[in-house]
Image 1 (cartoon, rainbow, N blue to C red):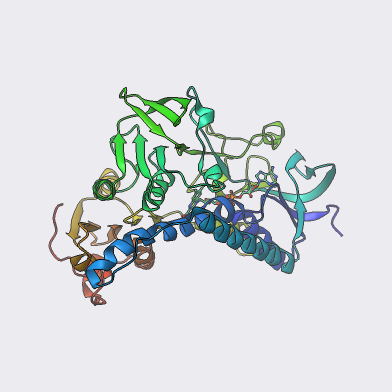
Image 2 (tube, rainbow, N blue to C red; image 1 turned 180 degrees about the vertical axis):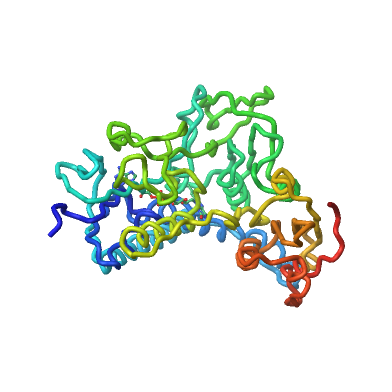
Length: 451
Ligand SMILES: Cc1cc2nc3c(=O)[nH]c(=O)nc-3n(C[C@H](O)[C@H](O)[C@H](O)COP(=O)(O)OP(=O)(O)OC[C@H]3O[C@@H](n4cnc5c(N)ncnc54)[C@H](O)[C@@H]3O)c2cc1C
C-alpha cells in the first residue's frame, strides 16, 4: 500500500491535465485532478471551441453575399449576438459534462478548487491537503495586457466570450493568431474593426507570403490593418473608448480587445518556494520527460510554453502517462506540428517556412500558386488563395506546406501526415489530385518560382 493518497495529482483540468490524468488512471494509477474553474480548461471554455463556433457564425455573412452569384436571392440577413452566445454557452456546458464523465469513468478523483503545492508530495486545495507520489502542473496560461494608461478599459479574449451585446466598433491590439482570428470574426459579424500591431506584418513565425496574402485579403474584407503602430493610451468618453496610437491617430471604439500575448500560469502555485526552476517568462523548465528541476514534479501544456496548442498539450499528456505508468518510454516530437489560423480567409501551415528553412541552411526550391478559388468565379468575390511548398533541393524533401484559402486547416492536416512520413516533392507530384478542389493545387505545382 502506497504511503500517498494518490500516485498522481494533476493541477488543472485542461487539455493536457485531463489527457494525462485519464490515461494514467487507465494504466491503473490512483489519480486526482484539481480544477479552479471549469472542466476542459481554456480550449473548451475560453479558446478553441467557443472561438471556432464564432468563426462559423461569422462565416455565414460572406456565404450570404456569395450566394447571389449562384442564383440565390437572400433576404437582408440579420444577426442575433445573444442567440449565438446562448447556443454556444449551452454547447460548452455540455462539453464540461463530457469532461466530467470522461474523468469519472476513468476513475479520476475530481477536486474543485485552486491548488497550491506545499512540498513535492503535498498539494493544498481550499482547507484540505492531499499527498501524491508525483505532481503534474498543467495550469495553462492567461492573457496579459501591456500596462498603458487606461489598460483597464480594454478586455481580453477571456472577457469577450462573456460579452452580452455585439460590439460595433472594435480596436484590436496584437498581431498573433488570437488578434487576427477575432479581427475576422468580429468583422464577419458586422463590426468595424481596426487592428493595431507594432510589427511590419502580423503573424510572426508564419511564411512571409502567407502573412502578406492574408493582410491583403483581410483588407479587402474591410479590416483596417495598422501595422507599425502601438496603442499608447485609452480614455473613456461618451462614445465608448478613445485610443491614442503611436502614430498620433485617435481611434474611437466601443470595445478594445487586448491580444498581445499570454503568460504561463505559474504564480501563486508555490513553485518557486519549492525550487522549481522557471524561465524568464515564468514557464516551468522541464526535461524531455516533462520533469521539472524538482524530481517528481512534472509540467506540460501552455505552462511550459513550448508550442501552446491543444494537440501539443494532448501529446505531452499522453507521453507523460505512458512514461510514468504505461511502461512505454515516450518523448514528444515537436517537429512538423501543423497549425491553423481561423481567419477569413483561413491560414494553415506545417513545417518550415521559406525564411526558417534558409536560415537552417537548406538550399530551397519554392513552389507557389496564387489563384481565385472556383467558388469566387461565380460569387464575384475578389479573393485569392495562396499555396506554397518549400522543398529541400538536395534531398527533394518537402520541408514546409503553407496555405491561405478556404478550408486551409482541413487541407493541411492531411499534408502534415505526408511531411511526418518524410514525403518528397516527387511523391507530391506522383499523387493524383481530387478534382475540382483547391487542395489538388498542392500536387500539381510543377514549376518552381524561386530557389
Ligand atoms: C482565444 C484562444 C483560442 C485558441 N485557439 C486554439 C486553437 O484553435 N487551436 C489550438 O490548438 N489551440 C488553441 N488555443 C490554445 C489552447 O487553448 C491551449 O494551448 C490549451 O488549452 C493548453 O492546454 P493546457 O492543458 O496546457 O491548459 P489549459 O487548457 O489552459 O488548462 C489549464 C487549467 O488549469 C486550471 N488552473 C490554473 N491554475 C490552477 C490552480 N492553481 N489550481 C487548479 N486549477 C488551476 C485552469 O482553470 C485551467 O482550466 C487557444 C487559446 C485561446 C486563449
